[in-house]
Image: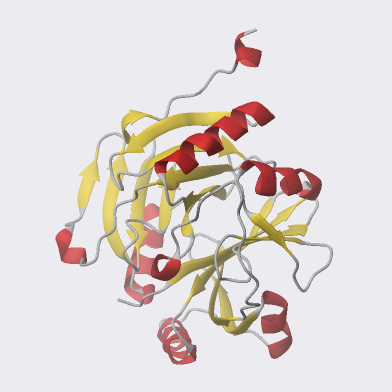
Length: 293
Ligand SMILES: [Fe+2]
């Protein structure tokens, strides 16, 4: 196992002001400073940030950052990728400083997603304060998961399994749409791909896992109170057993806010399987009084 974990996501957005409210007051992340004064940074654990929003004309995924254990692990992954003919670019010291990491490399995955592998996040040792959420489940499992659209599911799956040590946990095939769920660490899935999903946006959603079930309920209440669309209300997934809801971010992609996700300590504990529906119960749209009125 490569022991990568989901380290950060960077998004370009024309909606920075809306993110100030959505990130801090709805999701409950801690706003923090960073190297780029025009950007917004949110953190919810000891990492300097987990979400970096930079100004842009259109919402766009700028990078998915995977954390390697150290520089040796990063070097080994770069060697593996280059030996397979992948064009990898080593980050300069200046570029690393702009990311608050001590080293990184970047490449484009077969689906066209911008990917960075980094090591050595630079901690500021400020106390993490998230007054609206009791805590988030991160650590060796990274900050959560990310789901992207791909054209060729098999190519994407082969790439992450073959070069980056991801395990394929499960698939889902409903004919017009296919998904695959993978992880390089005990989190059931850190990355999922969907082929045939409606719409053209690459970033579909990212998930954060709160420490308690009440954190999820309170967060869903905050969405409803703030008029943030809850696209899928509280429900429990069939694959990772996550109890979660999905709300719409200012940029249109969704944020899944969950609790109680399955951890797979040994991949042999959970043989690859196919699911036939995404949720055991729930995950239905929530109509507010405003919608109904
Ligand atoms: Fe999800």
